[in-house]
Length: 490
Image (cartoon, rainbow, N blue to C red):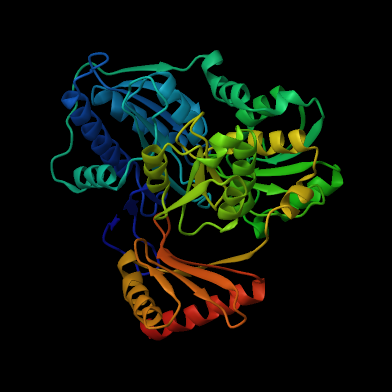
């Protein structure tokens, strides 16, 4: 990750990294920044296109969308007009989810996708995220890997930016294409096998998720109860789908006596779930429940040889689910691109992250709240169990997440190095330094626990995550780690 020089002590720098570009609109992120970053993407796409032996068309094709947040339209217009000026064929989706954009990149055999989004960041933020594709007509669109992201960053930071060139064009998506994503999910979901009616309260934070989720839920014969789905782009609460931000959704599930509550983030690549009692079961369960549905729907001999992929910060519940079927789990550094790379390498049947991001390769190699929604609803219907019963069937752990502000990502490294050095000297401890530092250890009572400390790719923060048998144990572990970090930075 690189960051632009800081101009005021109170203002974090513009973030440019593997997850794209993000900043505070009109504070450290301007339309000129958006134009420069788009030209970097265009230059990179053109380089790949011209080096390809299988050119499809006379110029590269790029699908462009935005997550619907209120400040996004001027950035969206700057991005697509810049791509067209750079000679690209541009297909406009307007407000659309990130996974929908991935699906449409594959549908159109496009060379890339560009989404104007700051994902789960608050409303004053926005950014630009890129998807890459080999444009061969298969399911391949995904986030750029570290090397590809660095090439775009180098072009963005370089002095020579791509000049305009002839041949660019712009077209809008059609009505039938706009519903292709939910139809594709429906095609692969198993829910049609059981006609049981399921009611779902859906919180889309007034952003991109509601239209496609409404189509999917209707096709799944679910009663969809809308909350925060007016598409205004004004978030009714902080948009990250965490427990403290979903108190109203929990109350709505109870008030409507609904079977499930679903919360999307603004670009709808993450899903958090509320059970029928109005209890927030957490983002970590989204992947575990989705994996349970995928594996239990497979023939036993296929499930036994299946591979699942997730990152180092995700709950060990995924291992417990996999072990039930004899499947195995491969862990990667945090970052969607890292998980996808492992999934493609090992032909994984499902993957994702503990932040509610499920990647179902039958649909797209992009985290997809619609896939997660359909898989969980299918699991409920196929088993006849309530969400709380399904959750109770999976071994339970306490996972606690904290954030610590950073002015620069580099500020995290001394603390990470100190933690790694300290724990390596302890017996019966495993230290993994492929992404920050993850420490697997035994607690005093003999139970297993882990803690992961790393700098965020998307926010100026240090992320601290611990999992143990109880919340008190996880908190204790984070307190100890936090004290070591404070001592390092003192």
